[in-house]
Length: 151
Image (cartoon, helix red, strand yellow):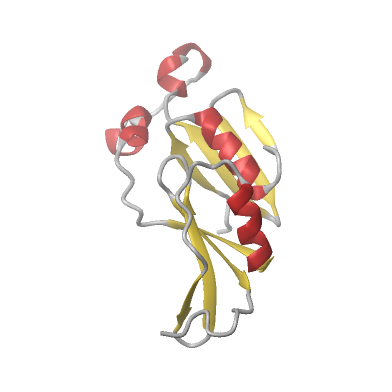
């Protein structure tokens, strides 16, 4: 088995595309109508699935096999509240520079400050959310200012 992709079922396909193009600083790599968009980078793939396309365009999609609402009711899935149990984690070489870049983006997302946690090794990161409420964590190399994380 090997990794294929992670894809998110989204409510607002175009808004999500704009958000991830800005966040990842790359355009959509491949797009299948207004149904599916892929961002391929560093040998990985993050994709967006329009949760409403199939029901809005039944003439453009063929489904075979049994329908299982738990997995296949995409409009219902797109409308569900986000439980924030999954986190998309991205890495940057320079966390401070990436934080400054993200601050300038018109994402409309809440943005945390740079945080610190230490279990075995110091870990610096910040978080924001995509248009569907999926948590995004960005980590990377960071040198804190003197006294920045002292109690």
